[in-house]
Length: 415
Ligand SMILES: C[S@@+](CC[C@H](N)C(=O)[O-])C[C@H]1O[C@@H](n2cnc3c(N)ncnc32)[C@H](O)[C@@H]1O
Image (cartoon, rainbow, N blue to C red; front, side, top):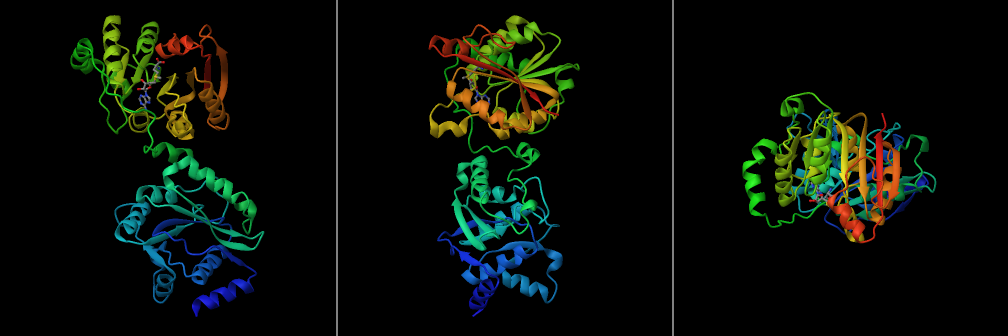
């Protein structure tokens, strides 16, 4: 009966409902564009019309008698802001506690123009490991309903891309109020996505001297990973410009740069233990004190341990190229990485990248070309003979032997 009334209301409003209840047990439903107070009304009528049992959060203060009864009947769940845990945690708990659960929200958060979407819908879907269904209200075609179902395991960027593609053809009540589909850079920096890593941990065999270096020299040069910002002035015992190298490999280049620049401090991050062992030996032989090493995933180190605006320069020399298409998602250069690096760089700080893989060079040009955080200050293609302000590295040497050409970039943080 109610469904019939709802269908009639849709017809009277000139709406054509599209799609039906998806045949999946759990999902997060996105409602967009949200540019008018009417959107919520039509969305609720649609939900009743197709018999979609979907829950959504409403402020706890709205649950007074009798409004509370009506809201609950429509699927509203009170959001308890005094309870420990965020709205994301509360939604995830509902997914965990129910065999079947549909949860909906409007990622724009408000009907006014917003320069970004809130990332909650993605974080709920990612944590609860459920798909995302794109709901829409198209005032152009006068259609409303449910569109594609996105598998959240494709990752944040692919989900946003899919949303952009889909909503590009959907017209809100006030199209000028529908903002860009992106997450704020600081949210991406705060919550790096770690489901896909840029490396596969190769245990590698440690030589006797590397093993000895790791036990004897690590206490002097090593910093243990902790999810708390370092006090770099205390770590180095002075205030100086700081350079970070990500994935330093065997560390020859890193030690050479630290030796040639005694007025600067260097932090190297690498996950490959034999490389760290080799670097420790080189650092001891060079007798340098302006170098510290962290043996951990660089994304987590950047996310949790490197303070904001603390670096003058970040070096990323010959990152793993992941040439196979199905592995491209592992490439460390992506918008979330750039957001993290930009945040840790000081104003006008620079990001230096080099690669010998033509396909990765194209990818880097593309990702940085689209970035609002960096501008390309210099780009040079060469045969190992004209690197930008750095010594030759071990992997560069390997690439050159295979006949690869090298591309070097210097990107400057836009302030
Ligand atoms: C191709 S090698 C290049 C090494 C060195 N930069 C060179 O040019 O000789 C890439 C290095 O990055 C390291 N690496 C990849 N992803 C990393 C991550 N997320 N955190 C730390 N190290 C990483 C790998 O262990 C590997 O040693």
